[in-house]
Length: 255
Image (cartoon, rainbow, N blue to C red; front, top):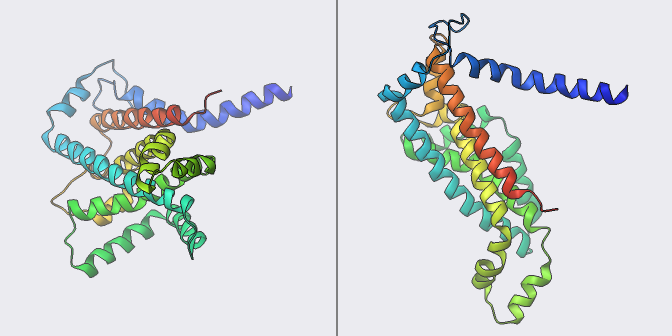
């Protein structure tokens, strides 16, 4: 009975999490213009997404920002994780703790603080400020992901490489990087997903001249749920699911 209870309990949890998403996906193929009235299967709403130029522009902008921010966050985060692991300096533990503080900060707090920071610097909100903001909240996830991998490495590998004449750059490039590559790829994929789905921070740090897909979806939902929104949300969910699945596969330990 206890085993049956566990399966029922897990089933209820997963149903609570994924049934709403399943409903959204199903109604994205509904031929009815009203989401709650099923009238047959169709793909026309996905076709309208392709022909909608503002949505295409917002989607391209989101991909550009997500790709650029994830690349920058991955490079900076990998170097930071290596520095935390390789060197001992004053305030090292405090700085690493600040990484978790940024991760746990509410999005609205981060969005407002970044907006005030940009206003203080005199930067007009737009693509540049949005990119900086996305790098900021993606960076801690890369640091934690890569550091959790590098902390499990044998330090003697680095010592052996230095005994054989390798300098710090050669050690990092030829020894550490190949060992960290699964975590680096996972950090990039997680950063890409976080950037692609963000709404709150993006709302405060982008301008009216630069539109991205999550904010576009938010503005469309305020006027009512349309079939195109279901189709668009399904595409976003599928893209996020693929990136998270790939991140899980590349970080999965071989048994």
